[in-house]
Amino acid sequence: MVNQHATAATKARILDAAENLFADNGFRGTTLRAITTKAGVNLAAVNYHFGSKEDLLAAVLDRRLGPLNRQRLAKLDQVLAAAAKTGRLPAPRDILHAFFEPTLRFRESEPGARACITIITRAITSAETIVRDEFLKQIEPMGRRLLAAMQAAYPGLPSHKLYMQTRFCLAAMQPLMMEDNMARMAPPDFKLPHELDRQLDILLDFCCQGLGNNHD
Image 1 (cartoon, rainbow, N blue to C red):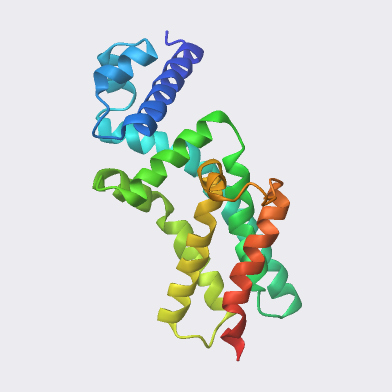
Image 2: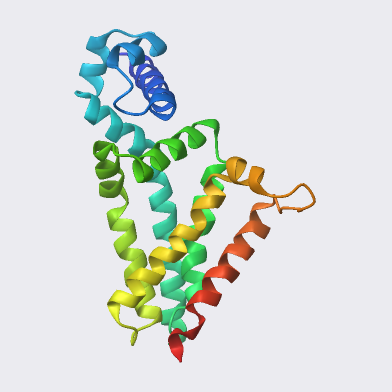
């Protein structure tokens, strides 16, 4: 009889090991042998639970992004439902808040979140197309829902302009996801806000200023 607790623990060790090694060395720079050594399992365990190295990468990202996307979608649905109830267009700030707030809280959620953010940063900035393609596959449904919500907020705005401006808003969030590194660039006399709520307010102010002339 399969011990489900032991099985779950083994899978978690493999995921933890892969997550940390992918963050430290990249996908290509990490071997299955390194993962099995760090996790304290044999290769058969990886093959049994996940299959290929690519499938393991997908599981690593899904473990973090799956719950995060569900949180973001739930908050976005709340914003749209509230707007529909009042008969008004959804407020862009509320839409962006529904996406940004869970994302920034994810940054501080647990130690593994930092490793996942590093993997995602590598995916965006490196030539590791396998990681980038898997990341985009996992966030594409969320991205489409976000864009549809922004279209509801700006029904008369040309789609290409809305797409570019939404992308700019998402890009504005990235420095906060890499806060530890970006903070080193600030002069010593700059007092940077470390409270998440304050960072979120500044980010939303910045994005909404950029979006502000869309109703003109």
